[in-house]
Image (cartoon, rainbow, N blue to C red; front, side, top):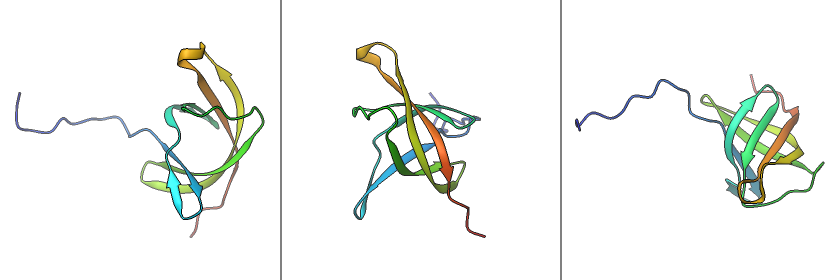
Length: 93
């Protein structure tokens, strides 16, 4: 094992942060982002159709987006949630 850090060519996965008062919480583990669909894993089960305003961090950029819970897939012990990006706030100039 060398003393050099591992170099990864892939971009870091996006992060989703949910604001609650003055605090932000990372409730989702983002597995995939394809177009406007995020596939995530969470310890929380949100209602289908529920909308959340979240902060999406991706490729060094941060934007506020509104996501809608679109589906829950997979077995109970490995449930995935699909979030659809419903609205993106305009990025500041």
